[in-house]
Length: 306
Image (cartoon, rainbow, N blue to C red):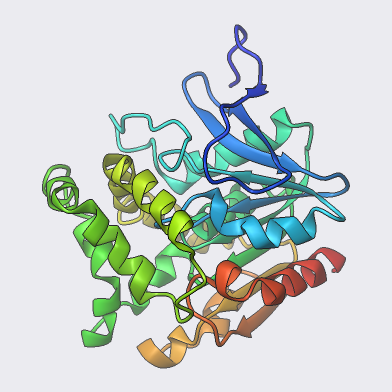
């Protein structure tokens, strides 16, 4: 709940770099967690959730376009960027259920009871959990380049699954992964920024430096986020699958052709969760909001029209 002694929203020190034209705020989403958020525009709200190893800045091109017609809300997830990074004392601080509740609380603090939600990578997992847990709040849902957590673990096998080595590293008990990543954080996080982008100029040097700085300052919380995806997040997805809980809102998925690479039916996997589905295979790299922002904007506008 929002602390009674503090405003739900307050101006935040402006980070660097920024999304031009957006106002930066710190918004309390629980008694001890506030999120850094960039907000601009008016009209029907859409919340954009970033992925790994990035911050809200990954949406800078998409947000600048959508703001013409929508209230656009771009937070740093808890544990990332300039948002708070609570200690994970009981294994629940970074479950997607907890992080999804943050986003619902954030939207409500900004005056929106119902909103569209788009997520990339880790943010997409948070978005899916928000859609399952808070269907009254999420009107439309978009996922960029992931599978739901339960399916993600199911398809990772054989040598082709080596692309996801970081999932297994950060699933280990507290201690070892933090020490290993903390010994060379720029090399670790930079590996993914370089490997996953097909367009070499999609992430300019100043933005790349901001991503690396933010990630090196958040090793413990980033690992906790990933560790949750190997434990409670799987249990939550399995419980929903067993109960027949589905994403009832319109859903759009943009995805690289991981199905061919890893041998699974990507659209079929998604359709099992989302009966009202538009699934598109893209030709750009993982960082599609930066590599192909016009394609992402087109897909999001079409989603909002459904």
